[in-house]
Picture 1 (cartoon, rainbow, N blue to C red):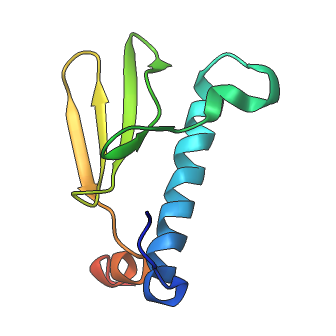
Picture 2 (cartoon, helix red, strand yellow):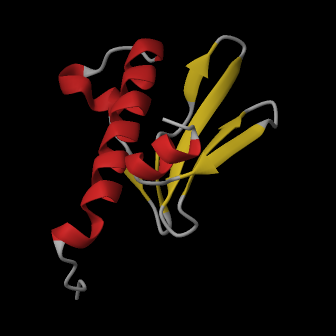
Length: 99
């Protein structure tokens, strides 16, 4: 059912995804009402991504999605704004930023 994926071949991507998920989780924890056992900070799975659902942030709501098919992190708001950046391994990001 699932393809055999060797951890070594995607270790850096796994680390990057883990880091991004922690950042998004902390953002969500800070902005949503507490639900027992932190259920308010989970990511939801759909056909192409992991998503937060709507997070209240001031006058707007924000949804953050990890698009696993297009390899991007996408943020969208209830007032129509959308921003995204590529989901890359940490080494690639560091090199892109000159560090």
